[in-house]
Image 1: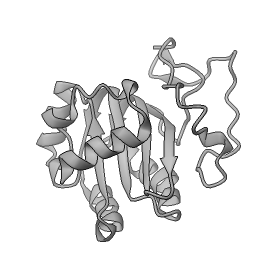
Image 2 (image 1 turned 90 degrees about the vertical axis):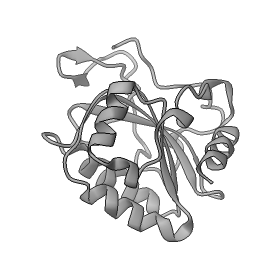
Image 3 (image 1 turned 60 degrees about the vertical axis):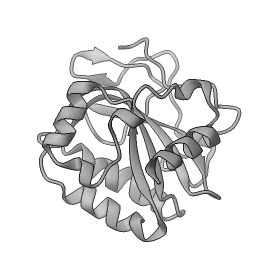
Image 4 (image 1 turned 30 degrees about the vertical axis):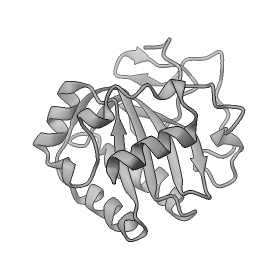
Length: 186
């Protein structure tokens, strides 16, 4: 896992550590020291922590004019033991909401497991964005992760599934990804 880096080809367009509105503004990642782990596996130092011990992320792009962001994840999304959705909502999403971000593209191909429980934070998140035609879309979820999302009835709050999987997002620019997903949601 230590070789999996967050996508970096848009760094000429956006760097979350340089964005004064970002929850990760001023973050300095050590390029030479591996300190963050998902269980016993070190992960690349470019991934950002949001207080979860099993899930890390990188805000790849944020467009304040159109109100969307693209976030890539790595690790295990565990709402049962780690309450990852609470940390994501409080430490990242709530701060982005202050800047009118209401459309969230979550790249989940490196989310290896999902363990869900309550839907309270997902409900709150949707309540916060739906008045402004907001949405949350999970892209490229693994089949067993998708099954667990469905078992927890998260399709009531999140867009995910076949129409959002196999999206070759690395070949697109951020605006094209946003437009492609928005067309599929409408």
